[in-house]
Length: 243
Ligand code: ADP
Image (cartoon, rainbow, N blue to C red):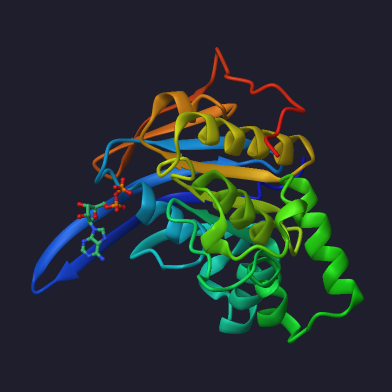
């Protein structure tokens, strides 16, 4: 049987500020199979972002085990962590995190620059084009990010996350700053990417958004309170991306 892409056991994270301890994540155990689309859902303050930051190697747990593709993450060198962050995983955030006064092209190619210092050669252009095509944004390649609507910004952010063809895409409240129509476009794209084989981990506080995944892990006060397959999965129709 194939190893899970992500497996955590008894994961905990305690923050300490001026002597005050906050247990943000506590005793969390679950696995994610390659090609799964899961939502992590819970109210504000339940530990979702902390959990995602640990899973995405932006933070380390206080205790517990994290296996990524079967390997113990605690033993990863800084070099290996950089490689994983750049090549194996992609991030999409609620606030898009695009660089202002910078074109769509430049935003999307950014992870390639961090990687090998590649500049705008033919290969880079091809990669950017493919990533923008995947989110139906190739017609805006020379726009500045400030000239885009919220939904378009998020689609560009997804293209940037896709540029190195990561195995896993983490999306933290990706529809949180969008109107409902643009939000659904983003969920459609995530479902399409999932069908193409990407593992998707979506963090949200909204059940409607969560139900676009095939499985929901419910968290409350830093703990998992349920882990269920979605019975009435919301499936966004295909082929209707806005231009
Ligand atoms: P969610 O994403 O579900 O809103 P978070 O993971 O952001 O939850 O937060 C979980 C808990 O951890 C909250 O009580 C929050 O106040 C606390 N917390 C988050 N980040 C920090 C931090 N850097 N320092 C101290 N406490 C934090």
